[in-house]
Length: 146
Image 1: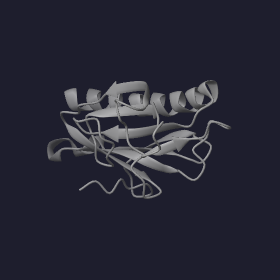
Image 2 (image 1 turned 120 degrees about the vertical axis):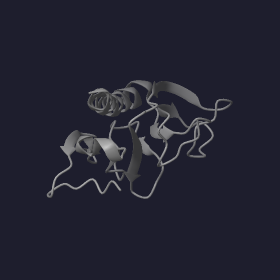
Image 3 (image 1 turned 90 degrees about the vertical axis):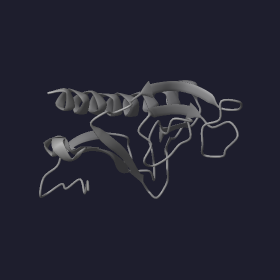
């Protein structure tokens, strides 16, 4: 029961963060990066501690408290699974200031439950215009969680 609730909560957080990144990139008139982060706040494809939205003022493609502008931080800390980002071989997704879209950054964030909770695996895919789509694990849409 708790694992299912966690999976749903993480899914909503991912979907909301993608919508928010689109809106903020347009309203702030700056590119906004979205990334999964580890405990230290470093962007990482397999970060499961936080989901960050930020303006990369120093252009190093990673969040730095000293130089970057944090737009929003979502705490994840999944107890029953792990998270993984796939976005054109990058560890972040960049939402363009001129359109609010992640042109060239389509991909997905997947939620992979621990062994006892395998029925909860899914991915939230996003296309080049930033539309998020929930895709539960299936033969047609495998998550490839191990």
